[in-house]
Length: 535
View 1 (tube, one colour):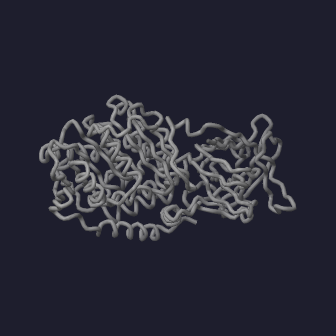
View 2: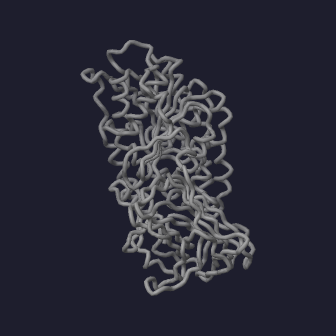
């Protein structure tokens, strides 16, 4: 069942209320070396943008400028804590503003469209005119919506020399429509919050109207213009220093589209991936509290905008922290995160005395010539976790989404388990599954989960990915390649991996219907496999 929209709206409204009621710093806080003022800034097309302008005291100008667009459904108050620290500790001139269409800013919500990019440039114009900001040292930073706008503005305005993109996106379509599967809860959350806290523009209203009819084409048509991944030519040409901070379990903007973007970008860059869900890795840092992501971002800006020789240039740019806990590890590039790969072959699901439900093996050698049929359209206990409510809160508490493997209904899912890892193992990168499936309908959704299973059969979700067949020929086998979301995960001593594939997940809108069937197989010429990257 889909999570009720009212529940998502209530949860979001609570978060937004806490954020919006947080008082700004005093208007003249000279004791901490920063003055905070509420200002109106002319935006694109004659609208007014409301902003908090944080000016350092005791620093000679001109000062490096940081422009921070607020996250989706939040206001300019979001970054005041972090902005004050940046101002009084390092002398940055900071402008944190409410994105158009939300709260007290004018205009309508344009979903990071050209108007939003033009707004950011107008904010830069205003800051250069009205403050003692240095036109040669301009950076942008933001969380979520603010991250996306920052990247897009850097592609359009070469005055932006450094960017901090936290919990953002580079490919909007790949985020909300991965493998042609709608990320239902993410879309509902974004739409509901836009109506609660803003004034949706015509483009968003049209997308929503068509989406309610099952037509995602308008959203897909608008996505390229709103995706930094389509603007790599401009970014590579201007070469701003880009730092990306993200969470492995981000339920709105999964990390794979950002690792792809990071690898394709040729300018100065840094990538930090750690445990958590959307914005949980850096949320407290936005309020000015100690935070690893914001600390690293400050060092990034200090080096690239202030010229501080703080060691950033000599450090490995890719930093990852295991989702299951542990210390940071650093690498020279993203491919180096996966030093080795192990290919395991899916065996025929069979019953045994110790496992009364049908379970296949993950084996070293191909096991071919078998078929295994499951019923479609009804979910199992294998789930990716409910966005925000269980996803963010569980990750915040350090509790991964779990499953009792014996309770996964084998009539509705394929299940394969491997041998225990003596001494444990580190999964590092994006696991891949190659499956042969035979659907009974032209459209069929599959949900592929990888679990870490203890000796009692209790599993923690390592990673997952949806995949929807479109235009398949019913009754004909089809090869499916599924690249799951990247992760770094420590598998404890004696634990084993389990691959589960079913046809329903509450986080997504799927094409599977009750009464349909899906048959898994492993033909001799194309064995079904699971490829596990390790460090």
